[in-house]
Length: 305
Ligand code: CP
Image (cartoon, rainbow, N blue to C red; front, side, top):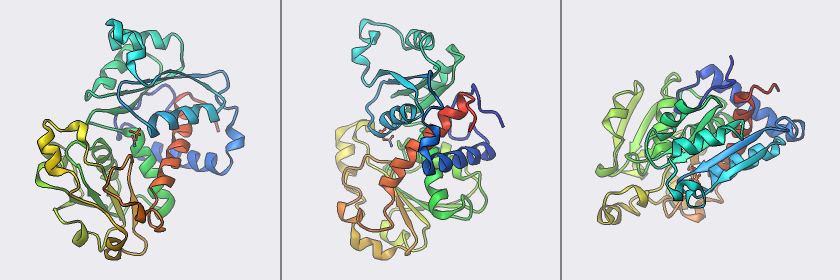
């Protein structure tokens, strides 16, 4: 099982065994971070964000620094030579001269995939428009495994923007590879999971437009934001926003051991009064994202435990 030198572009690029190895390493790091604090001494990660981010960029940044490595890059391409007309291909080829691993977020689907052909160092897709977000999926799988002690035999509710939501697209494909999972896709008609994705899924998918009545037998409720930036018109966004809002009283419809996940950021889809409920795990999920990214950086750089 060798991940050294590989790119990570899609949530199914790594085998389930490779993902399990990453989860095991992330668990070890989380339980004894000090042991790993010099593992990437002398290594440099380039972080190129062509789209806004809080968690993905900062958790990668923190992950590399907690491993003893350094980070270069930008959070806004306006401060790079992109604003002088440089192509992103030339930027990535240049950055390869200075770094050992590169993380790219871009608003255009498949842009990281195309860029990966220009370089030999590992390239990690940190989100490509509405397409994929594979490191969020690693975060989600690590979180699910932590709370449920398994990745199979789970009923997962996916709620919100299933059309443009890259975290949902990546997660459903990844969870489909484990036995006996099923999905309840809860969305408005205009934000349904695209058919090109649902037809690839072999697990059972139930479609629903009702959050409350879909909650009673879920093991996981994965809430997502209605993403203003992805809509073609502001009118369509205005008609869709606020369609699903999880409040504390609605949790009465859920099982005692249902976990409430969200990739974040949230706007209004989870009321703050849910945060106090023990089933709300989204801030622990954000923390898990740092540990799984530490494991990912180590494995792609071929650094042993
Ligand atoms: N979950 C996630 O991708 O968050 P950011 O957009 O803040 O990175």
